[in-house]
Image (tube, rainbow, N blue to C red):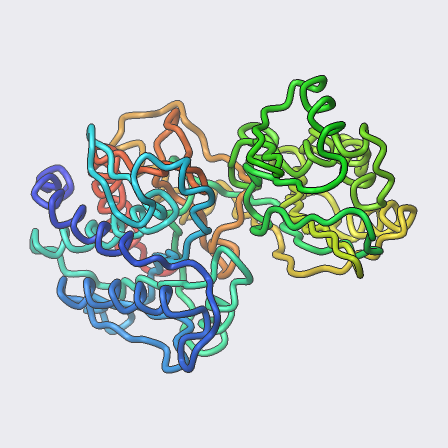
Amino acid sequence: MITDQLNVERYQDPYLEAVSRLIAKPSVLSSPLLQKPFGEGIDECLNEALGICESLGFHVFKDPDGYYGYADIGGSDPDAQMIGILGHLDVVPPGELNAWTTPPFSPSLRNGRLYGRGTQDDKGPTMAGIFAVKALIDAGYVFRHTIRVIFGTDEENLWRCIERYCEKESIPAAGFTPDSSFPLTYAEKTLIQGWLTGPGSEDLTLDVGGTLNAVPELACYRGGYRERLIDVLNELGFDFACEEDEIQIYGKAAHAASSDTKGVNAIARLCIALKKVGVDHPAVEFVAEQIGEDANAAQLFGPLHDESGRLTCNIGALSISEYESKIGIDIRVPVSVDKADIDADLREVSGEYGLVYAEHSSLPSLYVPVDSPLVGCLMEAYQSITGDRDAAPGTSGGATYARAIPNCVAFGAILPGREKVEHMPDEYLTVEDMMLAIRIYADALLRMDSVDKF
């Protein structure tokens, strides 16, 4: 097979340069501007990505309203279908800058790793797919089907980019998103994000967290409970520090999908401590009593799990002012569980605390049969390149673009056993692993290109 002769290593420096150019663009959601619906930084990153693709021989297109872009190549067959590679260029905020060894938007190559926000989620993997196409074309391969790389720009928030794409553009017949782990993910949990609104407080002011799909690593408190709170935090064994009149409660950042295995929620710890101090505000009591440090929220929903994993529940934001309180929540629901049941439980229990639940956004679950032609092509490619016959298709609590279109799965780019550091300080990609990912993607695209009709 042609992938056996590919000299992928020759693309290492151009690949790292391309990824570094994208990392240097702080593509975090910001205030909308004309034809830049998600802000200046995301628009600049989209322009950069399209410019890179154009220099590699792709035909590029940018949505006139700035929601998305794509890059096409191939399509020599009159009956060509479209094969999609769906990636995203937006990133979550970097969090506490002091937690980074080097600045998050200044790419740093050290010890075989490239560090920076977006290296793993999802700029590095997306560029691996692009360079897989480039390597095949340079080796003389002519794609019979059209390969389209779709660049999303609002994946970390409301998916308005991919929704706009699906409204206006052609939908690939099959595809993958390089936004998860190898070998592949055939099922993804239902995603629910929402807000619990309640009364304000005259003696408690909080504004902590922010991004619902990230476990908050820091929650700060200023107020009259300071001295008692310090005693309770020591008693509970929670990590904290005092800065003048501010108490900083520390957690551990993680993606909300892995909040039960990798994260430590600083907001939950703050609420647990405040309740123990004697604060009786309903928002604090709800978080402390119904969630606490159990990111599976068994107290609230029961012990829910199936082949896609356990339910996870992340408190991503909490604000309390004189006038109102708001809790931001992110829930990943196993594929066999009815979303309506989760909604009903959440409304009923939160109502007992005087809180009103309103859904902010939701995404349906993904399920692609493991015996489908798409899964067959991708698994064969992974096994052929890695020699790994033991790893099996898996499931995830993460929400990827795979669920945005039919016949699409999450495929790489993190290898089995490797650390997943998306949404964390010192996010990185391993250069050697990405070179292997390029080879896997090249093999997969060849196999997909040989299918007459998906």
